[in-house]
Length: 229
Ligand SMILES: NC(=O)c1ccc[n+]([C@@H]2O[C@H](COP(=O)([O-])OP(=O)(O)OC[C@H]3O[C@@H](n4cnc5c(N)ncnc54)[C@H](OP(=O)(O)O)[C@@H]3O)[C@@H](O)[C@H]2O)c1
Image (cartoon, rainbow, N blue to C red):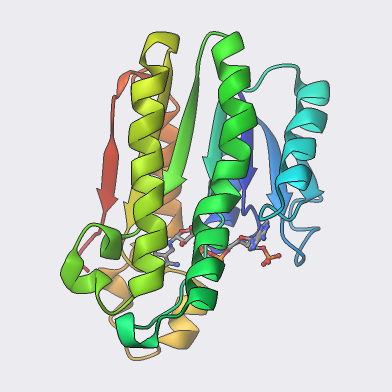
């Protein structure tokens, strides 16, 4: 059955494939853009786009309000905004931590709060977040201190949502990709073996499954999509 779904980070390397897949399945998508590529889905009839700075709470809440006016109900929120920064403890300062927390945690948190209220009042809903492997594996996290720490908040937020949402049919799933095969990553790491990476379209397939009737029954799920990385 077609769903009304919010997707943030729609024009990103992962977002494009997720929007394409879920749009092809006939869903009604309400997507956010950062400042760039805001016409990415101009030919898509079932995609409504809005430029929103999701680090700003008021803009984020306003986006949910205007989306609910149009869609009436939302069944799922997929939060794909995020950013990477390298650097171990010695290279990490308050400014870097604030930047990573803003982009990787607050951009999701600002949508979670109003959407949680909506899901509770409307019989449930699904949250899908994107974590990162360095938040789960300290050997990888130590060299990406601020990034890994900010992504670890996403896993914790999902756990708390799952605990709070249990009685209301509300679930949170965390997708954990290894390196995604995007043009940006190919440009940054031209000598890497791309076949070991995970394609954005494979991640989109997993997300589509999570939204099916069977996928909706998953609980406290962390999807490690590493391929051979
Ligand atoms: N790429 C990887 O290898 C990899 C690996 C593990 C996890 N991840 C995670 O997967 C997710 C998607 O990654 P990606 O490679 O698709 O990232 P991406 O290409 O950099 O896309 C990020 C998207 O977020 C938007 N955005 C940035 N700041 C924003 C803000 N303040 N408000 C609203 N939107 C904003 C960007 O819009 P603009 O371009 O207009 O600013 C862009 O559409 C991220 O959470 C990332 O951390 C990625």
